[in-house]
Length: 113
Length: 114
Image (tube, rainbow over all chains, first blue to last red):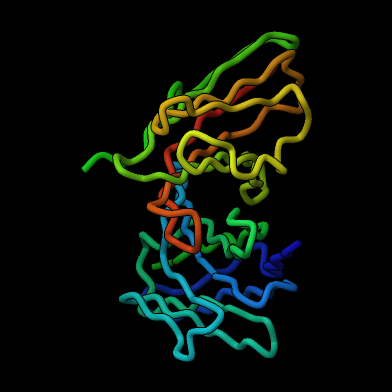
């Protein structure tokens, strides 16, 4: 079984600043994937970024980057140059041999002007 | 192209009633997933289909929950004898294959059991 821990229930960041959302995972799988999703108040889950366990380089997608530290079992999301539209819930998830995604409890991010 | 669609968007029912929730995945996506999201929590896996068959139904909480995907496209999640604890947002997702591909989520169905 896999477990995802997101220890920050809520985070604030000022517009144009960078913010890091923490995620640690626990898995016995040798091969797995790590994902971040954004859920705005509308409720839809929006895929942001993916990191494979064997990828040696940290994944990046535009303003999003994933700080993957395999030995520490952490997969933190870094959002650069925050925008007001980034205010939302952010979920870290892992997918292993069972295909299903295991989600953390999420972090609520509020971007202030 | 069209994304994942789910109907109805909201469903209010009484305790003990039967409900059906529908998911229409992205065309060509062979993998389909159902998740349940309770207030203040992340989504929890219910069942995964690869084509027409349920490849993993280990997340279904009990035998009141059942899902089908008879033609490998549209899926229906069925809940019998609903209980107040079933109240949640039911999310459907689809992906091209069943491994670590990006899962595209629908807007969800908010189920309220009175």
